[in-house]
Image (cartoon, rainbow, N blue to C red):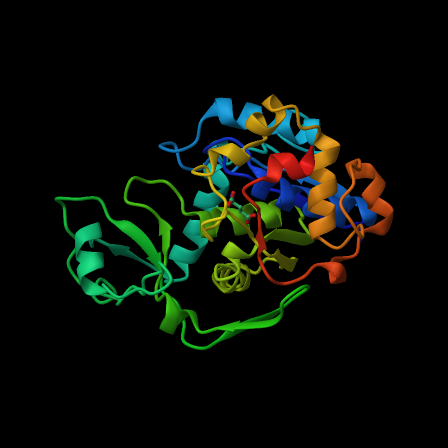
Amino acid sequence: MGNTLRGRFAPSPTGHMHLGNAWTALLAWLQVRSAGGTMVLRMEDLDPDRSRPAYAAALQVDLRWLGLDWDEGPDAGGDYGPYCQSVRSEFYQEAFERLAAAGRTYPCYCTRAELAAAAPHASDGEQRYPGTCRNRKVSRTDRKPAMRLLVPPGSISYSDLLYGEIQQNIEQSVGDFVLRRSDGVYAYQLAVVVDDAAMHITHVLRGNDLIASTPRQLLLYRLLSLKQPVFTHVPLLLGQDGSRLSKRHGDLSLTILRRRGIRPEQIVGYLACQAGLIPEYSAVEAKELIACFDISRLAKKPVVIPGNITEILA
Ligand code: GLU
């Protein structure tokens, strides 16, 4: 039991599930099921402004409709719950306090506008924090600070199961990153590490929009003396406009596709074909793919979803 693979799907319930979420969920599920492992569903409803219980409920309906199940989760229970981040603050606080006690955190009073002015040329949407508050001696009383991690110099590297060796110098690329927002909400980077460790996740498979977050998370594993999982990032699904599938591509939500009469096996078959698991498109049930799952068949390039996807699937 001790060596059993444990994987997870960790959606943020901030909108309806679309083909891109289905792709990641299917691949994470196949990685677990093909190894006879344990599947965990964790709701990353950390951000109270953006998460909605109705989306969390709909996500679970959509996952089941696709034929994906889980052994532990918000409804299923399990030994390492609760499985919703909104009720796990005490875990994040404990980890945060350990980092603070080790002298690794500091308050940051910079406003959004100040941050934008200090680093206006962020190329990939990720700004490097210039360290403005690192050496600030006086604390302010007029506003609540965010709390940042004092990032040590040096590079972090790891071996991704699909993309191979990944290396990043966090201090140079993102700088001291936020652990807790000024409104008291713990940051994704901290919460995801605390939860994956607490839930004994051995394998993380997720979209490669998060590949640049992984070194930050590895740093936190190290500083908190937690055991790190094996990471696999998978290519993203893109819309016709070349941008990452998101809520904006409403047409590609599972709710809409279902309403148009598309069956789950058609979606699963299409995704399986894109993942190289079946040679050509045909309707297939998720469980039929367990025996042929092989991560090395996955191409590393993004998958562009054609505009006439409904016709292709039907
Ligand atoms: N909650 C994140 C998302 O929906 C995924 C986090 C992860 O898989 O680490 O984008």
